[in-house]
Length: 58
Image (cartoon, rainbow, N blue to C red; front, side, top):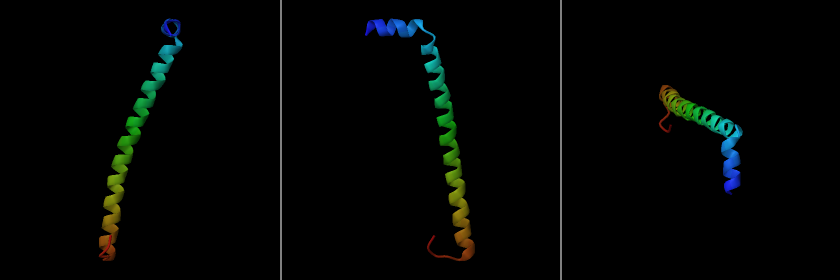
């Protein structure tokens, strides 16, 4: 196990893995924010459409 860790630290592929992980974290954060915003906006639009149609069960 220690050989693996020493090799992992020496090689630059470890840095690449960290960079990919950070990029994935940024993309995931943006996706969560977008879905949260779109969910709220969609809910507001559907509720408005139901009210405009005069439906009692929205």
